[in-house]
Length: 335
Ligand code: NAD
Ligand code: TYD
Image 1: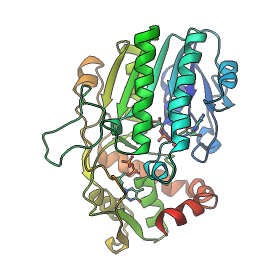
Image 2: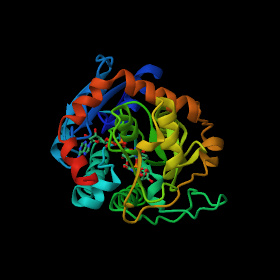
Image 3: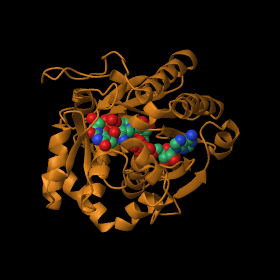
Image 4: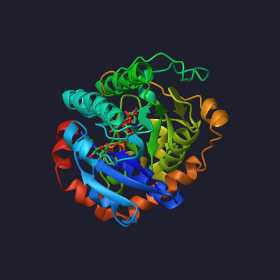
């Protein structure tokens, strides 16, 4: 049995990764280390095989706690833990610097102290900034880092620290940069679950600006499979861009959700644009496809339907969130 250390495993992508590894990889045990911030949800961990999964509540900025929880003979750290929402980073950036930058450095130091074999940093395409609207430009692994939001800047800073740990101390590192994820258990501050939740309740659907910003959407399980392959087959010190070649304008995404739920387009409400709103993200996934032999397994149509079905079948999950501090956030963000 190998043991891996997953941070942020009670969040959206981290919990999908934990599930995928427990379901599909037989010889791995997981220590799941998560601070349970507003985005971390113990409900996301229900039904896991507890003989191979151990949850530890802790903050990646707390070095003692990390060192205590890190198992001896740890195969790899997968760092999902982050403050992850652009709008929140615009309202207040310092939590992003703490968790995303300082927290990553503390994990790198801890990996060195405990001789962890490999360090996998879960990054984002947003570190590369924005692309023009024409169809020919894509993010590649050699695109310059030009982050535009405080969130993206903190994730870019983390990437630099990972690179420095590799170059200076020989830490075995992998960086993965993925586009926008969607799927089950995503916190309803992000576009797709927010639109599903509001539409289910016949509430208006806030679309920023002209709604023509483009995101490159990937089903969360496809992202998690690519992370596992990057860990298994990736070359130390390298970055891997992950994307399903699925560019969509926001307005198209919103209309598809309304149509699937049989709700009227009149629920759409164009609202003031996000400051510094990146116009287009699009990933050239050639490297993960050729070097890692990865391909997405879920089409956009299947993935979106699965996601909508999950939210329809798990209305208690979303109700519990919408009853809490989320209400104050929503009021502040959308008036
Ligand atoms: P999320 O906000 O749903 O989950 C983040 C998790 O990290 C939560 O469980 C939270 O409790 C935990 N966490 C936050 N601060 C912590 C701290 N200081 N110590 C320990 N745990 C802490 O985020 P997500 O959407 O699942 O994203 C996971 C990772 O993937 C992030 O690093 C994000 O930058 C990256 N990413 C996300 C997307 C996307 O579309 N959501 C795309 C590409 C990359
Ligand atoms: P989001 O899910 O916040 O992801 P990111 O900003 O990391 O790409 O937003 C996805 C897109 O949807 C982005 O272009 C902003 C837009 N958006 C809206 O139009 N309305 C909203 O209420 C939200 C949250 C996002």
